[in-house]
Image (tube, rainbow, N blue to C red; front, side):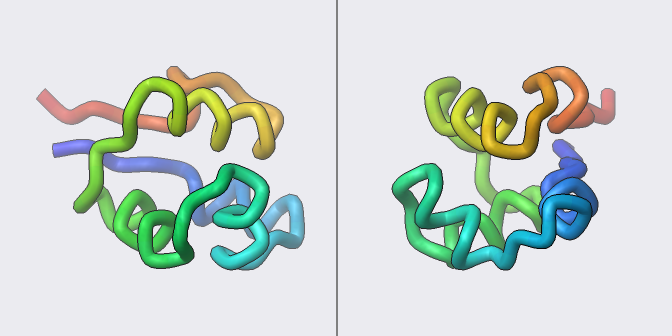
Length: 65
């Protein structure tokens, strides 16, 4: 299972799900599903989200073994 820090970092940057979605070119629902760990983004999308949130992909996504 994958966990993310998207919600936490998004809040730090005062971004709504809609704001983040617009910045990375996806629908708000995609951000919602990523935050819940129910959507595995492409590498490009993961990179774009990390860039907007000023972090790295490694820090943004946490993988449970």
